[in-house]
Length: 116
Image (cartoon, rainbow, N blue to C red; front, side, top):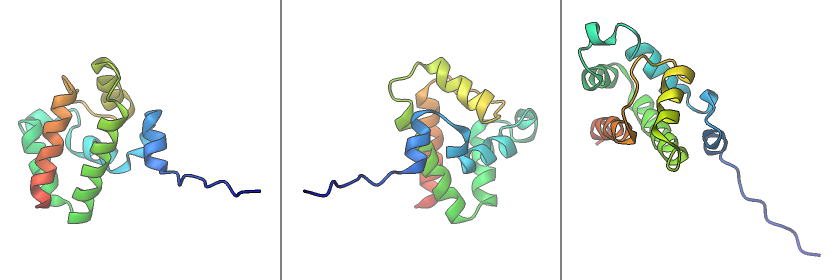
């Protein structure tokens, strides 16, 4: 009898496939803390809110946020944009809704540049 090898599960990737908020704790904290209902008045733009987070966050928090954005982008590759917008707004608690996946890619790139 041979022993079957089990794939090691990645809880974040597994949860991301079903789009569960619990898989994205750092992203949830970011959108609730920086992309809340007053973010246009406080920060002016998503880019400025991301810059404020980058100044306030530790390198580990920025790295975790980038990883969670990557996981979200992977999990939503074949999903319609409206589902992505609904998840970011309704599930994560953001008052900013990405117009497309490209908006999240741009946000990810902002965080990646702060990691370099």
